[in-house]
Length: 283
Image 1: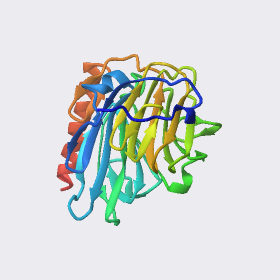
Image 2: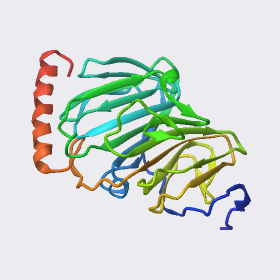
Image 3: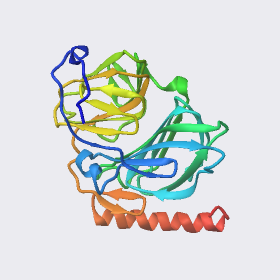
């Protein structure tokens, strides 16, 4: 197969190489691009990344299910989604808004498509450090006009170009959502201690200068060098960077912890919440 004709003159900086890439595993409307048993071990504190494209007519959503030891960040490029969790939060998240759910010592949540016919976006899971993995639950839902941005980059978590998300990241982490029109370029300079970096595309095609396509996750070599993106088509994507998570990933059903002791403590709390939900007729 012939190599693509890449015009590297569109990109100013020396290329930061892509060292791994994947189209993930698709299950119905959800494509899992990252999981802790695979790329999550390479990219931790980023441990799960799901790309979803849900049609209301064919997918009703997820019932209440448990998490612990992680925080989830959900961002929509299109549509809206219902949410509820055992902290008492319930409502509808619109496109451009952010759902932040820090499960800590254990909580349950659920959701699915809202009123729109189609809902598209990403859900990211972050591993929590030992001092937070058994901490309190936190639910924050930002409307689209509450999500700060610099140019085309919406700052979902962390800081970029003088703009800081009001959500408190559990560690040095940046997570950005970007939309570029065909022919536009954008440059991301990560903080000095952010040697982990990746990009995932919902739609379109980018040059970095290597091509990255819709539905693909690409991992950059460990470095804090800048990454430049040039859109060959209208493109929606997310970028993550972070300092490495220097802890083990101990996995349970819907949970990620740093030790078996912490996992067992969280599982006990999850079981107690389950009994309450069953008593209320919610499970």
